[in-house]
Length: 160
Image (spheres, rainbow, N blue to C red):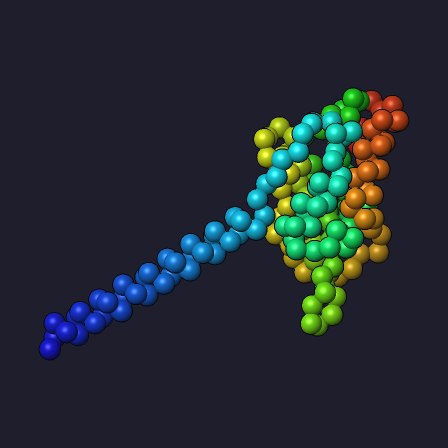
């Protein structure tokens, strides 16, 4: 009878360990698949591909492209006099999603790493309150791209 109790305890313990390992594995796998880095060509501000970036961000966060905004007062980008990225950059983004409880606002960051192959990354979204001053992400990126073609800045200036 004691062998049976030991066997059932061992089987129960093995099942619990298996379920925990499987749960952690699935959780990690989903996190990695949800927000993988994506790559665009070019290291210059004028090379920004606004439509593709917005489309990819919308896909990753599962939001409409027309509901993704750049936060104007908290985004600062450093570029050279030739408008090459000086180092990694961050564009703060918020977006809205319709839920059963109404529209919800979320915040995440679009991080730009020009020195790496996968040079764009979207952070995990967090729920937030609406921001007062914001621009459609597509319009914000287009403005940055077009500014690079007409503004004669010197090295190390900030595009804000």
